[in-house]
Structures are given as C-alpha cells and as structure tokens.
Length: 189
Image 1: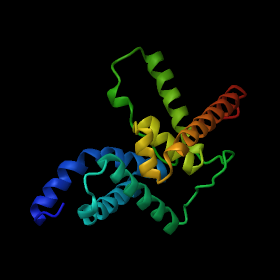
Image 2: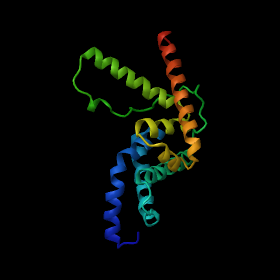
Image 3: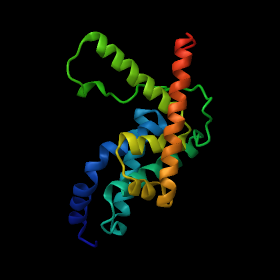
Image 4: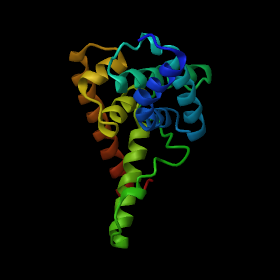
C-alpha cells in the first residue's frame, strides 16, 4: 500500500473517515465524556494514519475501531479511570448526556415521546452500569452493528469466544434493566 504522501492521505480519508461516527460513539460510551472522546478519536486517527502503510486492505471498520478501542483503554489507564472490572452493583450513572437519539424520531404524541425518552434514558443508564468489557460488546454489536467477525478482530479474541461474550453481555444488560425497573417501581430511583 505504498503510495505518495498525498495519495496515501486521500486513500486514508476515503477508507477511514466513513467510520468516524462509529469511532466517536465507541470512545464516547467508554469514557462518558464528549470532549475526552473527541481527543481519543483524534489521537486514534493519527495513529491509524501513521500505521496506514500496514493496513493492507483489512476490514476498515474493524481496523479503525480496534485502534480507537486500544487508544481509549490507554487513555483510561493513564487517567486512572480504567474500570474493566467494575461490578454491576456500581451505582455510577452517566456523568454527562447520553447520545442524542431524538433527532431521528418523527413527530409523535407527547405521551409517547415522554415514554420513549424515558425508555431510551433507562437503556443508556443500564448500559453505563455494565462493566467496561461488557459495555464495549453491547456498544459494538448492538449500537454500531459490528458482525461477530469484526468483533473478533476489534477485541483480538478468537471468533468462537465472541458469541459467548455477546451472550453474557446481553444477559448482564437484561439483569441491570430488570434490577433498575424493580428499583423504579419501588420508588428507589
């Protein structure tokens, strides 16, 4: 993939920039801070550009998300916010706003809108309560739509392990949603 510098830049932009939103979403969910996520994605894209000669026509989506993931984990370790083993009992909710999903929803009845917003916020809060390793699986698979093959590449794990991790992450999310629903019904939230 050796090209002149200008051609390399154009090729990089054409192949990698379409994944910018997915890269930001992953970093945003993992660090819970828009500004930090922007910095992480910028650093990850700079790393990716420097490594672009080694890209060799791999799955561009998985390749850039793996770099973003690794950059995020490095950032979390350096900022002493590495929470890979956070327990499901940890009550830290999203510190800042969740991803804005309201922009894509058609006009609806105000009661329906309020219920939908409440459900979306509840889901975001439940995702945030997951341990980091399960949160990233949910984000990559369910929100970013990564295939099992892409997950194996991004997480650098055998393909056979991906399905069990996705299943455990989904079960954990279901448990958190159920627990939070019980708390809400009991008036504890």
